[in-house]
Image (cartoon, rainbow, N blue to C red; front, side, top):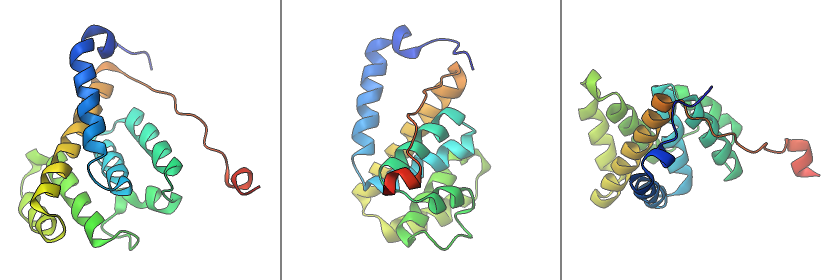
Length: 156
């Protein structure tokens, strides 16, 4: 994939602010939850760059292969907590906002698992990753991730 333009070169001041907001949002809730949200939103948006980047980062932060692989079918997979399910449902609802009716049920699950402050933090994170997905897809961005050592090497 050849990038159409580099947004960091084209608008460095705004992109620096965007990166700062991204980092602040990502640090606002538990790491494992944030990584799942980033991957799930990127799956829905078809952003190969962000799926590649965030699955690699999730593995490096201790996420399991099983939970990464099952994320596209999270509703049927038993390996996510109620809090994670609420976050994933909210991610799906906001990322697919134009599709409508799922928002109310997702909101109820969200309110049961997250404080008001956490709801805002999660919503900001969902907005941030959706924004990155649009930048990456729109401008053809690709960031090569470092190779993750295979299990045999990691155990040795």
